[in-house]
Image (cartoon, rainbow, N blue to C red):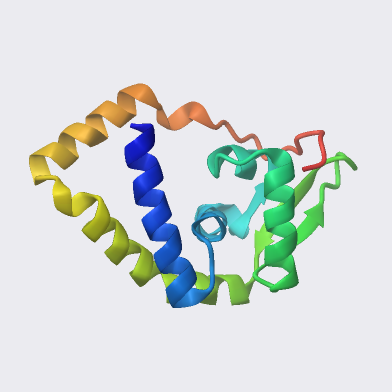
Length: 145
């Protein structure tokens, strides 16, 4: 499982960097924010979804903020917590990069599996990682990330 994941992500990362100058991790952060209410997520939840350490996410968010693809916002109820919010430029960059990513996933991963195997994999993943694995309550995390 780890070798397959590493091989797929290494190839997709290289393709995203070559075609768009954006890493797979950056793409994933933009994608998660795009799917969030108001394009905004708590940094701790974003770190968990992106499978990054809090310090790793902080560095990535800082880089994406310098590129004006997202902004950091303070949490009004907890000075230690913060949010990341997708900007319009971030939405545009995501839209530009999405076809490359989806084509890569189809070619590098899904293309090796039949429809039945893909459906079985979805069932297996649902058992291993339930959808409720990351609970979000809209409150700040209480830790700066």
